[in-house]
Length: 167
Length: 383
Image (tube, rainbow over all chains, first blue to last red):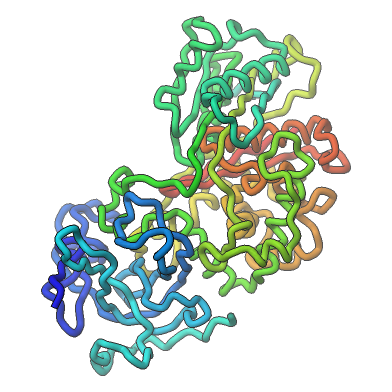
């Protein structure tokens, strides 16, 4: 198996498990949840925060697609303009915590809809010079047939889904 | 307070000018503005110069005359020119100076803006993994807005078609080929739902505006002095959905800084949105123009679908928007963009906008800028 590493330490739980989690912070003064980890609270300014593992699923708040290879640097995908595969990005609302911007595994906007349930996963997006595969976090439609992750724990789907977007 | 009036504007064409430095475009714009105002450079008492690419924009004095004038470089993202104009006006309003100038100039390479995320206080992985693109924000903001307020893809295309059509009648615009709604809807999707011909591009250009005390305007020019009724700038508040945000707090969204700047400007001016005759709104993309109509109080959320179908925002409509082609038609040299907007409003309020002159007698003009990392600038001008 190819060696793997995360794009950054402290961004999500590592080594990989069947259900990864994003790592955020919770302000010990006002309770604000931040992602990625923050040394100062952007709401109350407190420098005191504790680490918090964020919910592994949520709903799609909005999304867009990326139809051209992003300027590089800073993008460091191992694709080229010719081999570039369009991807999607969106904000996923983790109920009661925070809205997180992430890559989405579904590149087709017609198969995405606001309010859709999404689950965290890890995806390889580039290969390092020494051949190590680099992973980043992404969200995948939770009802995808070949969903690699385990189903949600019961009781987590407390948020009713919004109506499906007209495409 | 003393009132500031605009007595001269100068606009270097926007587009691509191989071999011509931004500083030279800026100096040309200054000379045009001075000539329009009937002012000589040594008479200028203070200046505010904005640029993204020129490291020391105040070095422009080397091309204009070393008079010792206090010249201050300003930068505030896409709101840079709005900031320069506000400072030039404030210097007069507070009585510090009687005659000031605001200058903006830039020369950007082709393609989307690229930068190291660390300059925006954002971790490296955000850029490495392909998330650090301002265009994502615009795609995602209008996608959510369309979902909530029933705006169609065709309306996005109509906005772009209007702005390219207006630019076709503007000899200083960059994109002067009109495009049909069908052609726009057939162009490739860059960031869903936004297509290639719904985006503006970074380019090159410069603009300048000369201001003086209202009671001294007659000393310089016979043109109608244009009153600076308000200049307002606001940055983002906690909870607002802004460009380049790896995350956003949960809960009720807070209004964008545009809403805050707009309200402050109306209050300063003692003028309401219903009094605005013509507007220049930040149209980084067609969706932004639609959203900014509501964020600037010019319509309610969702009304755009009908207003645009009726042609209300076209020249000749009830509220013409981006009559010179906007950013879509002119491109965006960041430092100059807001001064281009003001140049157009000045021509329209003077009644000298030629083939794109808004009919009737527009009396109140409005300009708006929005940029990273969440800053908006609004000016309200009147005859």
